Length: 253
Image 1 (spheres, rainbow, N blue to C red):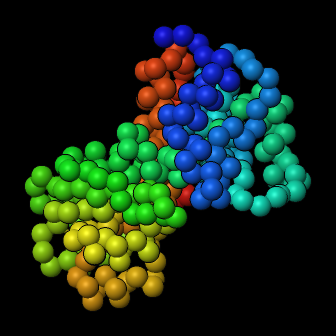
Image 2: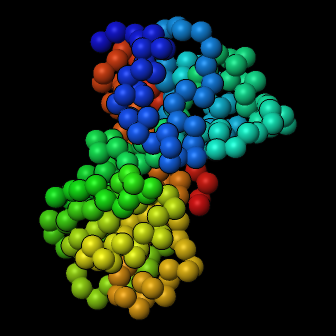
Image 3: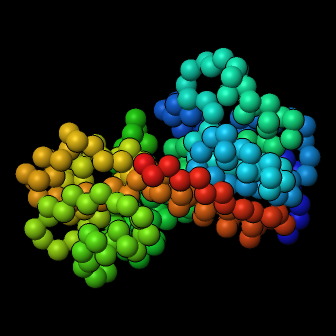
């Protein structure tokens, strides 16, 4: 293992996460969002959101790079002022590069949010599914042994999940779409799933679940999207001689 030059690290991440695959469909500006000169990267901090608290904690951790799921840019120009200015200035003044991977980190079939939840549940026959503008971003898989929705929520360590427990058959086939995936309950039903695991709940889907006898487990947008950044941190620590740290800034949502 060796220290990585920043530019070499970005090249690896862009290729490994298939950043270019999502350029035309993702509102996020995936890839390097803030960065200056090429240099050695020794400490990488991982987090879900590039919020002010995360940036301040990354600086406290003496990070050279901050890798997040939710970056600073979302498809529209934004004035560099007020708290946005403060975030940019803190990153630049403290020489912390910012890298974001949104849909690439949801969809990745080795360390993505959805596949990591599937692995944690020991699902088998895991397949990419749930097309978003032509790219699959979720997965489906099969439980080896039937479990209750409460057991599944516990296995995923969700702290305050919302359980729409309407399925009247044992849970075997599971769909997983992290974040705002509640709208995918219709496709989950078509695929023969008994359960959709996602982040946020959605009022408009409650009666569909109840009437169609399919369950939905909403673990929270934030909590459902910690899996990928944590898995990427482990991947990077094994591949390169770098220090890694996950910063937890939960929202409860």
